[in-house]
Image 1 (tube, each protein chain N blue to C red):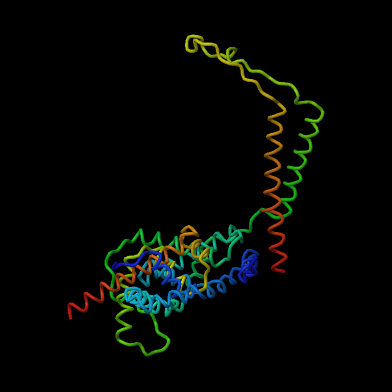
Image 2 (image 1 turned 180 degrees about the horizontal axis):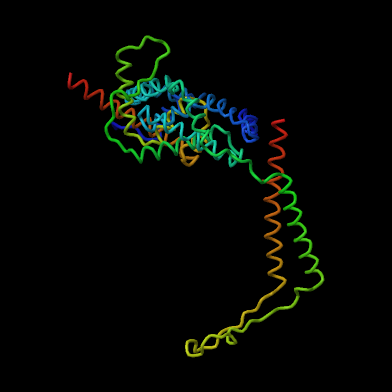
Length: 185
Length: 174
């Protein structure tokens, strides 16, 4: 059994120390927001969905059965809440302000790489929300394939296949977009 | 052939993820040297892989935590589960007592007889049912044995879920 560092905090919250929940939020808000953003592709909506998910998690904290890590349980709530938001506000239009550009640590990003990133993000919108989230979680390197399956509601034995297929599809889309761009130059 | 098979694509992705080694890796690298199509596809997949490797976490707004905590003030507080280990032990004792009592009654022969219920004696109007209905035979011992079996299953589930697992989880946290 893996020791979950969140469990002592959960016990204190359940014992009545509500302010401790702020520590749990601080630990998990970046992941929660990233998952919501990957699904909704809209910052204000992702922020609202992630906050909503934290409130739902708080209200159902007593029902957390501790069979899995708290983070896996929480991100599953974030995933489901974001999917509900997406269905509610199903917008086709994507503002340029909301286009994801990955931050590069090295600071020196070549124009070609920036273009590829932009096109990849464009291609990502063609994937399902579950595939997009699974790919992001896979590359963030924090979760096992089983945990990714639990968060995204996929079958554990199909997660790897779905991640493979999603990358193949992105590579195909990227090739088409870059060829199209080259022809229009 | 101008398209790779799914198996070849999977091997290329496993190669990029570092999931193949030894002879399999050497074999693929040999093939990459002679197969331009495979090499070209590896480059395409590597482009995607490289961009994703720079995936970083998105940053929520600075007041994210404060805003959730403010909303929590209006939300009902979570209440701990009423299923404490003590309650589960009481329930388990109840289940075991029921199993013991039923076993004693069976051993003393209380349920040895059979009861027949004749459906012809029922109050159903004879104008609706023209044929003779069969009689139902109830074997008391069989029914009580099934009840004991179900109680044993419930007992095991209680012992596992409500007593042993929470007990060892608490010990690990201590």
